[in-house]
Image 1: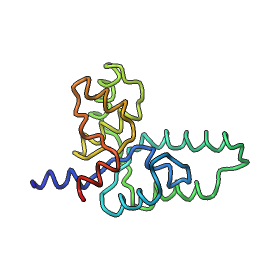
Image 2 (image 1 turned 45 degrees about the vertical axis):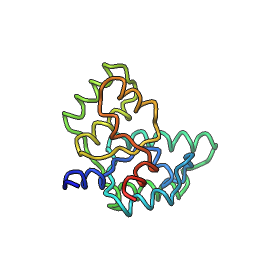
Image 3 (image 1 turned 180 degrees about the horizontal axis):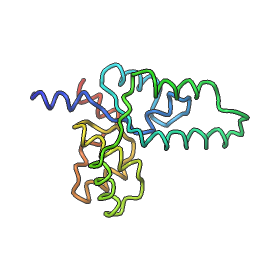
Length: 159
């Protein structure tokens, strides 16, 4: 296996669905244990722009549950994401914005999915997501859809 291929299998950009369990928010099919295994075995990246999505989901969940305040577990989890060093927060560059816009011109509406993809492509990494619709969209429009994988696919590739 070439060195660049080994790197490709060891660096992963996470979609927000994989970050939510750190904040105590349940996601079907994604557990804190799975995330722990991934962070122990791979270099993890999270696009800074997706922090907006993460905060939005957190606040929506707090409001849905009619909580008086954000749970301490969620605040602690948020700080782990930002400050622990386990997850590398990646700032966007101009090329990312151009690719996001290209995807939007093709009809994709979710800026966060598009940012995940652009970041993974730039870093030559896999993008961990549960979003099959986005993967199919990329395939239908001739983009490199194979970089989008689930945690099961990731763990099976390096088992």
